[in-house]
Figure 1 (cartoon, each protein chain N blue to C red):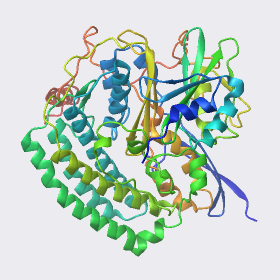
Figure 2 (cartoon, each protein chain N blue to C red):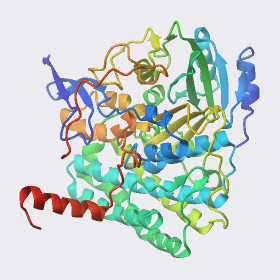
Figure 3 (cartoon, rainbow over the protein chains, first blue to last red):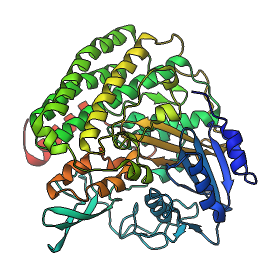
Length: 153
Length: 398
């Protein structure tokens, strides 16, 4: 199998976006939240369709979402999300597999996927307090409402 | 038309080995709708990792899952090693891959047993689990433990393999391959087993691609994808193996894919042991401070791609660790694949993805904390403590 020149293909696909090769040997592309759908459609054209997960990070000045796609290589789309508007357009319409991951980023980082069809809670319990997002760096955890039980004294 | 009845199952239910909630809509015996909810095991592991150094993280992540503990540490080590720019010694990579493949064997054998049990074929379940002990013995010989091997470390592995151990594992492979052939025969020719799994839990290829499913679950629907080949890692680029796929798109296909994958694993183990390079098994110098940057690491775990994302910030602690266990990718699709089947098919259909909710939800542990006087108790001490406690509190003398 001849190795494909992914760098050239990706640069052609994202002429304005920055395509970099990370320490992991995979490709990273910065995109705007508004152009996320076009970027995903473009990757689909290259045969890279499998969304692996969505990684939400709090980088203090802003949030960062990373969308790694696995085809015969790994291409990660990164989207900066402003702290004062934690929203991102949903991918649920184009990539059905995104539904679970978008629920997760809403739960842990409080970034709302706009237009998501099913925003039930996923990873945090049903009685988890509203507006507390555990993976934000500035999170203040509410005191536990139930005392730990068990163990002999 | 029959009335639609809502059937909730879980979070605690005998057919679930771990907590998850399923809501089925049924009409008579037929399932017409399915939804799932997880999160009953979530104990904030990713947050824990942010407050610990990389080596401490390694031991937390090892305990995400009891079955594929080596998968998680491999994925995490790979991501960290990439950030450090470490070049691993070949022998370390080979030994890491050896445990990876042994783990795949033991996980798939465990699954075949569970699947056989779910369809009521308990003699197969017991036979398979007996053979699984061979693999467990090999793992114990290598690492000193049956699960949670603590075999990986950043920069390689923690133990070397002696020539005696190497021969022991080699001797075990042929009997195992013979047994696998026997199970392939049973799987494809035993009419009662076939009747129970053929056409059940159907997931079309297109649907498998759309839902971004992974691992044997996806490969059984004809999706030709394997991170061992597509995102090369560990010693896999040096090994010859086939990516097993099946066009059956049902549970029958998932059984076949897993059995044939085990045969491939045996072949890979033989290649590793025959061509084990000499030299170090761990990189001589590993920096404790990890430079700023982010790395994603793919690892083909027994259940599918296990993905770890690590962001370093130039200190000894990671800025962010993200784990995507394969079950997360498969659950939604498995839930939908049940639609159209009968109520009695629910256990085997859900079990057919080999679900692991601990992985999906992530767990937390109490570490050995010298400062507060907590310490790890040995098995002998625990036993003495138990005997003593019952003598003092219950008046029972063992």
